Structure formats: structure tokens, C-alpha cells
Amino acid sequence: MNRADLPSTTRNAALPSSSALTGSRIRQRRSALGMRQADLAKAVEISPSYLNLIEHGRRRIGGKLLVDIARALSVEPTSLSSGADATVFDALHKAATDLRPNLSAEPELDRIDELSGRFPGWSGVLTLQQKRITALEAMIDSLQDRLANDPVLAEAMHEILSSVAAIRSTADILVREPDLETQWRARFHRNLNEEAERLSLRATQMLSHFEQQGDTNDGASSTAQETVEAMFDAAGHHFAAIEAHGVNAIDAVIARAAGMEDRTARDLARAMLQAYAQDAARLPLAQFRSAAKSAGYNPSQLVHLGQGDVALILRRLATLPPDPDMPELGLAICDASGALMFRKRIAGFSIPRFGAGCPVWPLYTALSRPMMPTDGVLELPNGLAYHAWAVAQPRGSAGFAATPILNATMLLRPLHDAKNVLPQNALPIGSGCHVCPRDACAARRVPSVLA
Amino acid sequence: MANRILLVEDEANILEAITFILARAGMEVRSHGNGATAVDEIKRYGPDLIVLDVMLPGRSGLDILRDMRSDPSTEALPVVMLTAKGQAKDRETALGLGADAYLTKPFSNSEMLQLLNQILAKRGAKSAVQKGSA
Image (cartoon, rainbow over all chains, first blue to last red; front, top):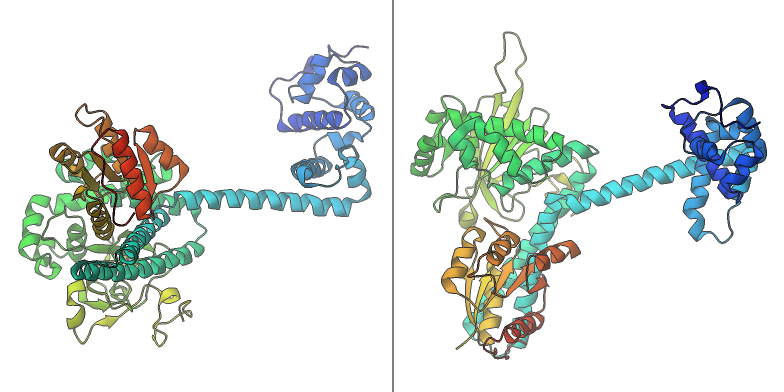
């Protein structure tokens, strides 16, 4: 009997994935035996085209036809139909075919059923290993992708290579120009020294970045945060269009930014730009810019403009457009758990994206004194100093008897020129315990890798 | 007359080293550190060759190159891209946009000088004097 015309119930167009699995197993087994589709079709009395549909999961199969096909392929029918055995079959088949190029002896693909039937325990071990290998390979792919697209790492590598380039060229000149004028020689020695210092700082920052990377498994959202951070960095943390047109300009800003194909990144960017627009509306640039310049960009002298909102002043200072008189200003905002919500990085001061920074930073200590702005001079272990202003304030409007949700904000301004005249009470800080050499620090949480 | 080279690079110490090397080789060197105004500076100075960093404040070197190649007054100017990004795809992008050569940081001084001289010679420009740090 020719079975090409089976009852319509077996010719269901929308088939479950189990049919596809059964079909693909029939195809694998047939190929392993070196049997042509036409031969198998003839053996079980169906047309080759119908077998083709079965093998591609386009027709259901069961009952006598399955038994006949299994017999023709010398396997148990259950090994063709979906289920645990079938999963084992697939995993073993994949293990064998994946490793095939590296195997000294050809795997017996036609005896997979025999293997799984006679050694179910060992088959289970191989199956589990195959799954683990697949999962690990997927993880390696994602980590490689991460390394290739990590903007922080890319920037750090660029800076490190720039320093190395300067050192290489300068050292080459010093070696090849024995009669170099004294003035040039002194300049190049100074440049070498500068670059060596920058290189050591950048290497420490990169180590810190890797430490922080290890602290998080939140791949998707951290990538979105980094993408948005890259957008703010690229704009110099100032969006002229939003200053001028408010929230109406947000879509255009996002459309122009890189990496915004990802919806999580886009949503996060929109939320952060809306907060930016809100700040700009409360403290318009035209008014704030000149006031900030007159006040020497000192937040303490601008507090009155914030009508009680000191954090607003700190945020607006960090988003001012460039001005030759304006010092470099960094910003960090965290929530009450210490998790960083926003940062504007500043040369020499590493603000970890993930994990913990230094618990001595005013950013964190402000959380224990809500609504009490503080300021002071911070000194890093390498001698770099910064003036810091910090405040912790409730986020949004709290109702009666509601626990306030606190955010802390810290503005940083470098005091590189004042290296030798640091105030006596400069606060010794670090970039985070892992990379801080201050062994005797009372706040030390974990040993330093630099110790 | 000496060949006129414009260095578009924002790293001060690299600038100083390259300027020294090229000046010692008899070239006239001018530098510019801002990507946003680089094209204007190129038009104003009219150099024989441009050494252009990819990662610049204000504007990427690749965007500057793209603009140059679509402007009749700058389209034929030789450009050597200089960058820390050594990946093949960056090189392909730069060369695809019309860069004459691509130098990856860190580079050797002699390699850079040789490359610049080759390009200048090919362009039929005045031959650069090779001396000093080569």
C-alpha cells in the first residue's frame, strides 16, 4: 500500500516542535546509515516527497509508519519520537559531530542507540557534558562580545596605547639624538615622567574596572548603562538642544546617539535625559551659566539658586558647556544602597561603575546625614587631590509616614595645582579597597591586590 | 620649500615628539588638537600632508576624513590616520574612506617618517629631507 494519501488528520500544517525533532532524527539516522531518502521511502512504502515532508517536520508521524521507519533504520521507535531518549540521542550526536575533526577514530554515529541503551549512565554523563560545553561556549561568546564592545575598556586601552606611543617616540628621540639641546632633553625627560605617571594611573584604573566587572552578572542592564554613559560622555555631559527645547529635543538626541538600537539602553537614556530636561527647566542655563562663572564654579556660593535643592546645583555645574575658565568637574550619584546611578568621570579619580567605591568618600558618608551638605578636600594615595561637595537628599516627594528614598550626589573638582599646599585636614581616600594601598585604613573591607 | 605637515592630535606629548621628529627631518609642522575645528584649520593652512588621529575631542578623525574627501578643496590631500585602535575593521574603515595610510600607536619614529616621505614622494611633492631620527 502506498501511504502517500494518509488521513487528513495526519497532515496537519501547523506542527508542534516534537514533529520537527522526530523528523530531524529520522534524517540524521538515515544519513548515518548512508541511506538515500528514496530507499527509505521505498522500504516503508511512502513517496520520497512525503518522507521529505516528515524529515523536515512538516508532517506528523506516529503509529505503524513510525514503527516501520524505525525498523528500516534499525532503531527503537522511541529513539525517533520525542522524549528523554531522543534528547540523549541529539546530545550524543552533537557531541560526536562537534568533536569529529579532533577525534582519532571516527565516532560510530550509527550505534548511538546502542550506546544509550547499553550505557544509560555514561550516556547521561556525555549528554550533560555536551550541554555544559554548549553553555560555556555561549558564555565565552558573550564575554568576548563584551570585551570588544566595552566602552570603558576601549577608552582605557586607547589611553594606555597613547601613553605607550608617547613614551616610545620620546625615548627613541632621546636615544637617537645624543647631541640634543639641553632644553629639548629636559622637556622630553619631563614628558617621559608625565606619561609614566599617567600610564601607572591608567593601569590601576583598568585593574579597578576589571575588579568591578567581576562583581556583576547583570550583563544586559550594565551594557545599557555603559551605552548611555558613552552617550553622555560623547556629549561632554551637556545637551544644548535639551537646554534650548526641553523634553521635545530628547528623541532627536537619542536618535543621533550610538548604540541606541537596544531598547533597554533607549529607555534608560530617555529617563536620564528627562531628568536632565527637568533640571534645565528648574535652573535655566542662561541664568545659571553666568552665575556659576561669577562664583568661580563654587557650589557653596550658588546654593541660593537651588531653592533648597543643593543636589540640583551640583548636577547643573557638572552639565555646564565648556568654558576656558571652568575647571574640570566630575559627578557621582548613588542610591541609599551605594549603587552608582550616574557618573561623570574626571581624570585621575576612578568612580567604579559596579561594586563598591571607597566607603570614606563623602558620596557615601553623606547618606548618614541627609539634607546636610558637606565639602572638603580628598587626597588619593598617589597624591592627587580633589575638592568634593556632597549631599544626600530624598528622591521625589515623600508622603506622610513614608520612608524617604535617599540619593547622594557628589561633585568633584581637581586640585592638581595645589598638590603641595593641601590643607592639614585633607581626607585620605582611595578608589576602592581592592586597589587601595592604605593598609591601615579603618574602613578596609578586603585586602588590596597592591599590598 | 619644506613640506607642510598638519598634525591633528590631542595628546600633547605625542604631538611634541612627532613635531620634533618631523621638524628634524626638515618639514614644517603645525598642530591642531580639536576635532570640531580641524577641517577649517586644514583649509586655512593648506598642508601637503595631514596626520590625523581617529579619537579626537569634538569630532572623530573618521568624520573629518569623510568631510575632506567630499570637499573639492581637500579631497586630494594625503591623509595618514594615526590611532590606538589597531583592529582590522578600523583600518578598513579608514582606508575605505580614502585614507592614504594607517599608522597604529605605538609606532616607531622611523616607520612613521618613512611612510610620510613615501606618500609625499608619491604625490609628487617636494622630497622631504631624511635625517635625524630615521
